[in-house]
Image (cartoon, rainbow, N blue to C red; front, side, top):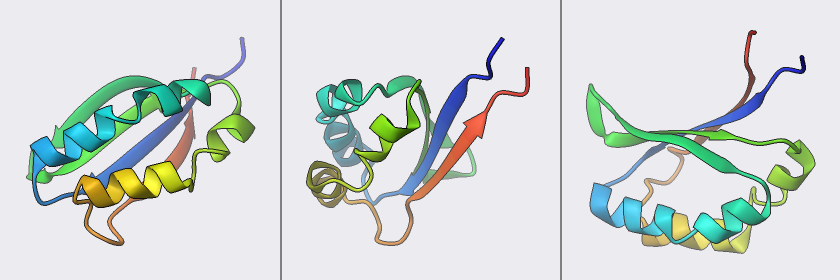
Length: 94
């Protein structure tokens, strides 16, 4: 059985509701490149940080989304703190 790939994103922001609105505005773009949102969370120790896990099948399609003008615009609209975005590609260990 092949390992399932995931993408883990961490971002800091000034206002969660503003960040979430911008995040939600990209639902169609994420879907178009095969990103499926698994869970959106906030760091218990730092509620100004979102931690998001996505599942995907084709890393080349996902790379089309990073960076994209739409993504960078959403970060700006969402109040993402510059330099705070972290992306980690993962494989499940099963």
